[in-house]
Length: 124
Image (cartoon, rainbow, N blue to C red; front, side, top):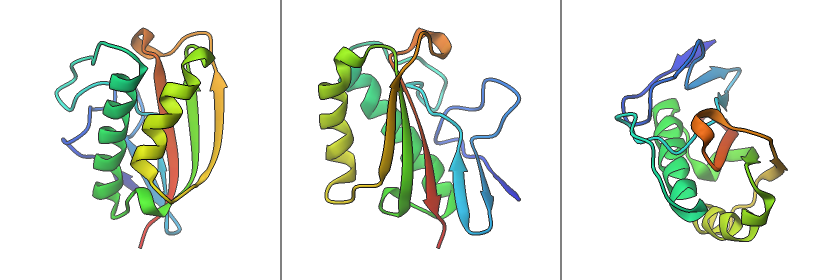
């Protein structure tokens, strides 16, 4: 196993890694809308989802992968009423690539954010 860590995404705020590579696959920890310096991005689901994708791109790059190599995502949302707006941002980042996805509403997320996303990707 190889631990993935980059200063281009927020540091882990607990006893976990930003991601792990094992057997040619990258498994990210959930990314929330914190900047690389740890500042919380306030605002609507669109702003928060865009920051989550900035973080995902950073950890994927550090792992030697990219959004184009993502095979599965899990989206955790505070309010499923935000799904349409989140989905528009999500689609804009993935383009024609459509990885498998689960999306669930949860009672509460770290720092009371609106969204958290984790990915599984191939490392080339």
